[in-house]
Image 1 (cartoon, rainbow, N blue to C red):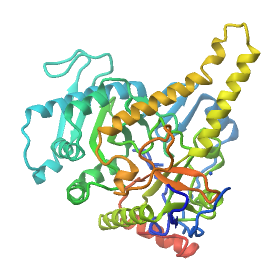
Image 2 (tube, rainbow, N blue to C red; image 1 turned 180 degrees about the vertical axis):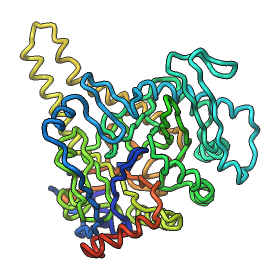
Image 3 (cartoon, one colour; image 1 turned 60 degrees about the vertical axis):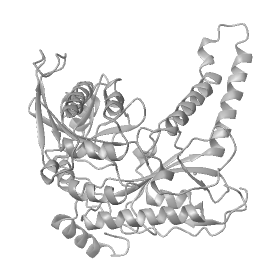
Length: 474
């Protein structure tokens, strides 16, 4: 992006002010929410974020000794538990078993579609559910495996095949991505303890959802189909499959979708924005994480003058957000967020120089020694990053998922932010108020919450206690 270009200030919430606050849902089926100077760019205005409320519930207090004893044994968020030895379970099932089992299930479900001819979608295709039993010893249709016996349900297989075709995903490519290598379990779960799996090629995310969310997605499919036909370029989540893993009388519902934040790009900041200010600040425990997710008030604190975009890019981003919000409003969907990942190019250059400097110093300190303990911290790490970048560029020439990057989603074009070779592809070029070069990775998340009577009453109650301006709804 040339320094002389006209830059508009991006008020990320001006077009997003209809977003409502995300409440934590608790119940027997679990809870789920998807959970940084030189020339100052002209035209940047302060953000005017509005608020949403959260209802806090209180219950009988647990004795301190019992609470302490329980925390020493395990850490629990929703249905996700981390034991003393570090083993992770979800609904008391080891997540490694869930991972292996769903790979078997997806391989069988998608592979079985090869025998079904291509045809137009019918209304009943959106409500179809296929169930397959996977005994440990195997059967005529399923392979033997070393996991506990389980049942695997595939929702609307023909409809999701159409969605995958719409984004240029071939069945063989989808299977290779999903099943050829072990999935990567992300260590930073959702606010309610969701499990997130990432495919090795960085293309797809598999995420656990509540029963009501899975049910709502299935009901949403006909309208989702119509919207994707009209506009495949969107910031809305791209869903590629809905499944249910059943084992030991437990149901684990999962959705496969596109990965918004590439793992080979370091996100120096990450925000979950709702256009609200009421209780929209990252908690102390969240801030202590290696990769915290900040909220609206944190954005105002770190970017009081906003983030600068080129005029055309700004217009394209705002139009896309407005269009997507209208779609969500028509579906009576609320509680969604704008996920914004920020890669600071200038900071990344300084970090790379610092690593090389530190590695050079350690080499001097260990002159004549074996040096195996320091070799990986400098040049090899940079080589690994460069290899990942080259791989990403190779994939980007013919990416597995069409319209998958932020720039493709908003249908925008921009002058290269720099001529350097190590600029990751796909991000939206931007600048901070200090003139730092940024890349933005954005997408709308958490759309599986319908605005029904419960939410209407909840919003009315919050508006009575607080003010109706800071507590926004769709």
